[in-house]
Amino acid sequence: MTQISRKPLHAATQKRIYEIFVDVVRDVRTASEVSSLLEDFFTPTERVMLPKRLCIAFLLLKGYDHRTIAAYLNVSFTTINRVSTSLKLGGKGYTLVITRLQKQEQVAALFAKVEEGIISMLAAINGPSRMWKNIKYETRRNEQENRKPF
Image 1 (cartoon, rainbow, N blue to C red):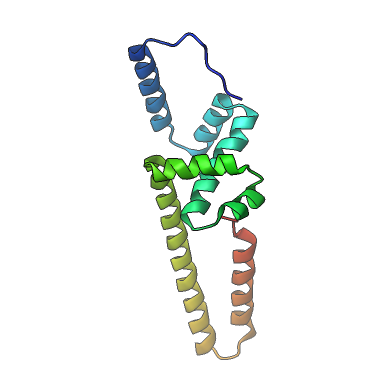
Image 2 (tube, rainbow, N blue to C red):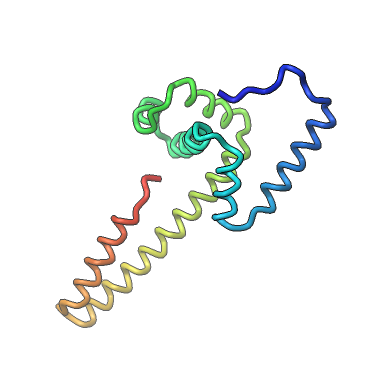
C-alpha cells in the first residue's frame, strides 16, 4: 500500500511539486515514453491497481453492475464504490478519458461498418465470387482476433 511521510510538506511546496509532476506527464509524447515513465513511477502493484480503477470507471459508465465488475476484474466492492463515488462527485478526469475511449470505439465501429459495406457491395457486384467471400471471412476473423475486452 502506498504510504506518505507523517511529516507533511509545506502547502506551497506540495503544490509546486504537483505542478511539476503534471508538466512532466503532459510533456510525454509517445506510447513508449508513457510506458517507460509509468514503469519508473509506479510499483508493480500500482501498475495493476490503477488500470483496474480506470476499467471500473469505464464499466460503471457503460452501465455494468457492481457484481459483474467485481467478478470480471477481481476487485472488491469497496474499490468499485470508491470509483463510483468519485464519478458521482465529479470524476472529471475519469469522464474525460473514458469519453475519449468511447469516441475511439465509435470511430472504429463506424470504419468497420463502412469496410463491411464496401466488401459486401463488391461481393454483390462481382457475383458469387469466392474471392470476395474469402475477404469478408478474413475481415471478420481479424476483427474477432483484434477485439479487446473494453
